[in-house]
Image (cartoon, rainbow, N blue to C red):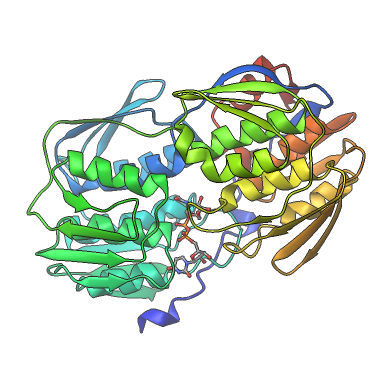
Length: 437
Ligand code: UD1
């Protein structure tokens, strides 16, 4: 099957959703105040865990968030024969000595979109891959044509067969690959395969997200030769095998941190985020400052407060260093009560405005037309029963619940557990009234 026919992969149906359902209950109206420690980055952890199957040696990973997406990825690599053990609350040891090529079944792959990140590592490690089409959040069509184009450029033969991504590669050979769009997942998959390919690979128009750089740093720690991560062009000199005793700490989660930053601003609070890398926040900070939020950067902290009335802003989501699509829904909640008109353009995932309907139940005035949402500020939001439709929509509803008068109940809370470690505990420590039923 030709590569460009794999455009629209299925997303998970309601039947895939894990039971039992839990709800988050928030009594809103309290400003968040205090300090909160940010966990390791979900998206960096998922990529690094996928890459861990490229080597036999023992790897110790620090700052791994114990969230359901990470547990699902660990389940998959264990299924492939790796041995993973939690050594502490956020430290995982992985040993890949007993890895075997196995088909990754639907029951495992459906749990997270990032199961597709095992395609490159499986091809490089085993010479073949069979992975059930991934599940994950219903935020758009999420094609894989760029992953396929890049891996085909390295010599892999790929296709979709009976609900599986199938790939074989007797040998991978370095090549020059141009990505039509700087896809995070495609950049990562191609990079992970190219580290063990013969010769040089040059990938152009790559994603520059900090999580891509973190993956490259991790691979280089295992002996890979990758240059240019964080710029538009990545160059990789293939080597025969990766190894060495590796201990690696994942970067902090800029999206988790950003969510608390927006929650602090939206409730008129004053919160210091600990364990962050402030330069990763430039795109968000620029918008927060434009909205009249006060942001003070420390060495590894950010203090966010909103002492003055906020102002409307316009947002366009873009690949990094543009404004992150993963922060768009949370900003939408904040803008709901900012006097005036804010315009949000979503350029990455077409279904990311589902949260607008839920926010409207809480009294928000939002008009959505295609990829554009127009938010007219209302004086206040009112608590209501709402449902999370994806991970970041869930986070946005938590923020809206914290802002609102009265009680908000958010169902489908499991979406939120995919990306936020100890959400209720952290928010309670900042003064929120939040519980789970
Ligand atoms: C990653 C993140 C996700 C984030 C997104 C964008 C992980 C595990 N997930 O997802 O949280 O929201 O980056 O920052 O890291 N595209 C194609 N063809 C492809 C691949 C992607 O057209 O082969 C398009 C997508 O439809 C989308 C855009 O490229 O419009 C960005 O997607 P991509 O960067 O690949 O996102 P993910 O890696 O899936």
